[in-house]
Length: 284
Image: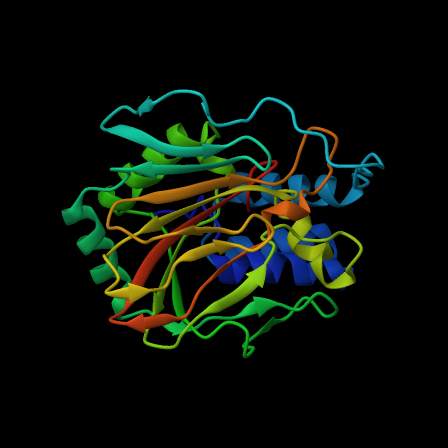
């Protein structure tokens, strides 16, 4: 039997929980090896996670949010990836937002929907106080995380997304597909984790802060379901293959409150989106 050299989400949570409980390193490694993880990989993974936990979180500099050079190639009219040309149709400098067309081909959108459909669960959010996943009334969609292990389509799409966002593939969380039926919405929120909330401590150890988001629309919505930015009065209409990109953390660790956004209720039809969140470091 081949030894595992990649952590599943379940084992990733188990590792954090074991370290939180103060379990001995050798016992954690032994448990992973017994579960068919490669011994060298297990030792390295536990050591790296322990090292991350010893690093103090960098304090953000005080004062108003300072905008620097966007990570995305924001001023280009097109973004050429290894396998596709993406068109920039709109951009805002402050906050950093770009609307992109032709991110996914129609057949790729349909294939991602098909992969996610059987895995959908009620969408949850992370509690800022306890760190537990919770289903709340402000988020009424269904969702599924798609791990790209062994799936050539997802590997190709994740590689393309990394090129578009100008970020390493390893910094991205698993592609998250959301399904909104009539009336479903996601009320305005921020994608970053406020480090002042104790419930976010564990997820911040898994790769640092989220720094940018790409939302790809997988279908045309019959009516409404726009992505909204309330502080800007901006509303983006879903269109199959289109995406909206935005950044919200600068080099000083400041968090951009102007990135507040949400998904307006679907009035007719349904809405499918694929979301990619990117961290400051390697996401584990």
